[in-house]
Image (cartoon, rainbow, N blue to C red):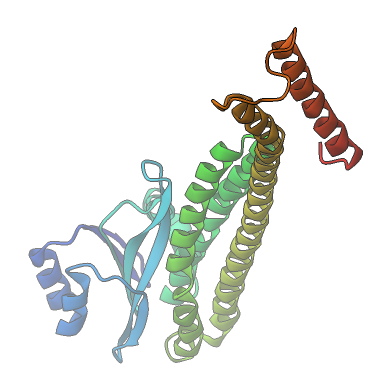
Length: 303
């Protein structure tokens, strides 16, 4: 638990809360037992609740896990009242930590960020989290550009694996992002009760930033889908060419196999058998037949 105090507000940041931390918060800020119950353990969905003297917000930071190549949610609980703001999390949330350390190292920054009270600080925290989404989307776009190159280098099998990983990343990102729109919309409504009216455009700005992130993510998803369809078309075309070649080969070989089988029959009377050079005559007929069929297929442009 770390604390920053100014003349106007107190910001408490907690990583990995313990029961004693929660008891301290309950005593200091008279928090409702339901709030404390929802802080510990972690929950899986974003929310915003009005408890009269303060708002309880659960927001999620999308974190890219390099080991699994997927985006996973890091929970951030925010309790914000008129003169205090509490942030609680279980993992390091880089934009939050950066903002807290900046305010801690430079008191004048904290004063600047709190000119309009806790509403401005809340805006800056959520805004930093949304802004941190843009580099992640750029990373997704970079991977999609690499997939584009792989596909047109005809490395189709490799492309399938890369497409699957990026799709997994996008799906994880969307699962985190999508439910948070309602939280931001309700935050705009609740902000009129808790914060000065001049803060209202700032919270509308958060919703606009969210929409921008979502639109960029959807654009990348559509691009990836188009590349997946292109890759599948190339694979299908290659497969069809192979099947066509094998089919033509079978059509050429089958009559020759039939002719060889006929001359291999153990009968008393077989044409050409017993004549001088009978083997070469039969072989010549088979080769000539093969050339005739190849010429026919080429004339039909099947080759």
